[in-house]
Length: 206
Image (cartoon, rainbow, N blue to C red; front, side):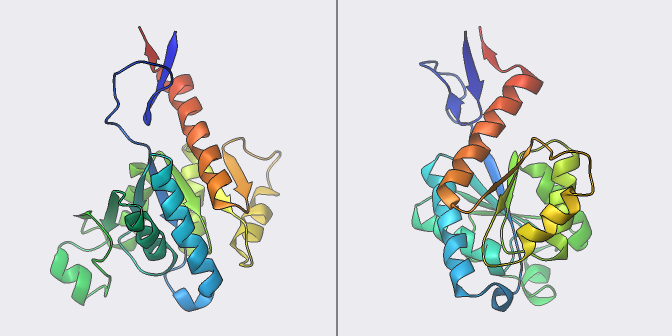
């Protein structure tokens, strides 16, 4: 038997080669909060998602996610945005959000709270970098729904805040992965997605 994951078959099978793992990147919208080092790391996260065969999903926004999208496009990858706005004009004028570095944008019209939920549920996994309150909320939704969640450790305080939240529970959830290195983190996340697909959806060839 050969197991299939959304990044293509594990083995020599030929089904589902076109399907890609959708990895969401969550983080602070204000670049100043993160600093230039964090933004460079964000670009590397985006690059690694593409290098390892994934599709990048963001909330079509600024800051850390935007820089991840920049990195993904440097590798000629596919990027996908989930906007809180109802249309392109509202996205740009009312929300003051960019259109850059995204191949496709879905305009939800749900505002930030609705778009946050749709973003999380549109992804097979998410990676949280230098973030803010909304990043913690997206982390919590992904955690509760069993999606693999990568937490990028760095000079920012988001990873420490998430550890503090998790410390209130009985045990560290198995679907949460911490790492300081973007390449290792993306690799672990993709492995976790493959394992989840096999376990929950029984994606087995023949």
